[in-house]
Image 1 (cartoon, rainbow, N blue to C red):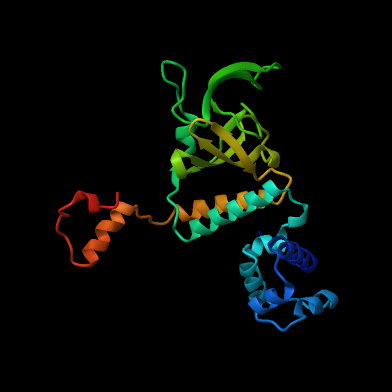
Image 2 (cartoon, rainbow, N blue to C red):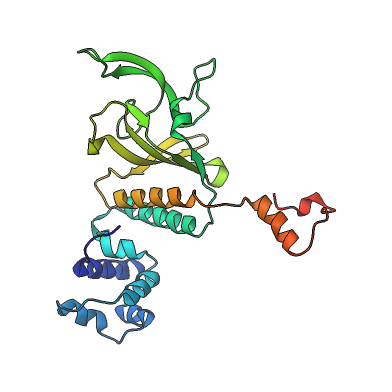
Length: 264
């Protein structure tokens, strides 16, 4: 997120988070390495702009990101939205730190998905649907195909770019989807979206948020998609590969006597 610095928004967020965590302003100033009363002084002086180091230390002390501290109106968000902010920030940070094993799903593969003989798709977000869609005639055409029934465009959804999934606890999978309207005008800015869904065994697929939401979550979703897309362009090592390489780096190339010692 890159927006013009809004000092008042930052101060409002500091006040909100101090209250949220039951922390005193003096403790925060100590954590940030500034003199007592510094925050009060910069709030009264319209010409004083805090330095980047101060903002970084404040964000770290209040367990949030700089982006959120500077750009998100935390007091205006619901508890669920604030919960999702923390979730998206951790996803972004852990992705940057190469802690997460994201998998890529190409648009071509998803758009060509088919069903089995019982009409079921092997993808949790895809289903066989019959609906009406704009065609070459003056009237909508009835079409039947496997689609992603998105939150933004319902059945009339096309996979627009690479999508990503991440396995979480107990077989749950997080999906980061890049989509568009299946039929739209060229250069229509409202025809595209990024959506985040969660599939949980026994519960099914549930929509979490998108970059079309009328909330600060929109920027966080866009930011996460960019981060994951960029990280997927670089080499990644699965745990079993890293285990073998680590052993080699220690001059160990012999087979393990007990297979139970292998961490995969």
